[in-house]
Length: 216
Image 1: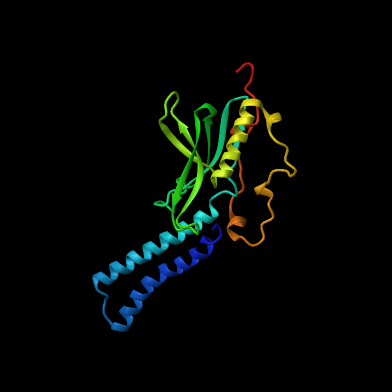
Image 2: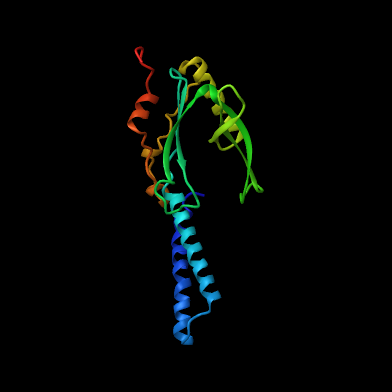
């Protein structure tokens, strides 16, 4: 669905102008101010259309091209490049953006779940998320997306467990190199063209690709 919002946004921005323009046109043609109820309806319509336009635009263009997850066996840490957004604050800078998170591998637990919505699969789709547990308990303190369906999630989770338990030599060999979304050739999807590339903070980038120091 990504790429639809950038075309819905201009429509909503235009709609946000239509409401006040209609009130002005009414006042000019009728030679009297519109009623309070009409003004309130126009104001609500303008704000709603403006909010929807900004939300659609930012959902399509603010999300990074990918949300990679790095598994560091030496540190027993998992680094997640997470995109966070707040639909109630579509104009906020601080409420939107990619914020890498670091979790302990021993506190992660895979979960299969169903998400309901307006989808072509009959209203629900199955996904796999990783739950972050409070150390020593089964209390979930956070969750993040891991895979788009159960079969894919089971495969990815099994590979992650193999790597963290036995190392890279336990993984199967792949005929093709991993996909690099940052260097992907994007032709027709305007949203992906405008989307920011994945950029790990320097300190986390170095930590996630290295082993702990013997002296630290």
